[in-house]
Image (cartoon, rainbow, N blue to C red; front, side, top):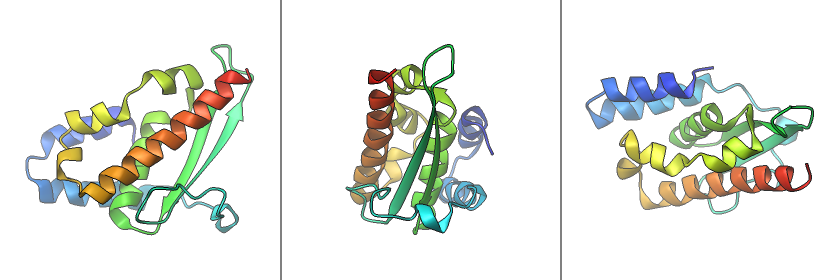
Length: 142
C-alpha cells in the first residue's frame, strides 16, 4: 500500500486537477478488498452521499498506547480513493497520533479539498470524524 508521504509527493508532481483525479481513482483501485461480511449497516459511515464502510481493529499491546488498523471501502471510485488516502494517513497509528493528525489540513495542503464537491467534502469530514471517534474511544479505554 502507498504511504502517505508517497501520496503527498505524487500530488506535488501533478499540476492538473484531471491528473490528480485519476491518481485518486488509482489509489482507490489499489485499496485492499474489504470482506463482504464487513459491508454492514454498523460499519457504514453516516453523512456520506456515497456508501462508505470503515472497520477498525485495536491492538492494545503497543507501548505508545492502542494502535488502530482500519479497513475501508466505498461504492464510488473517487470516494474509495479518499478512503485509501485516509487509511494511508491513519491506519497502523496510535490513538494519540491519530487524534493529533489533522487530515483536513493535509487535504488542503495537497490541494485536493478545494476540488471536491460539497457532498464529497462533507463525506470526507464524516470519515475523519468516524476515525477520530474510534481513536478517542480506544484511548479512553486504554
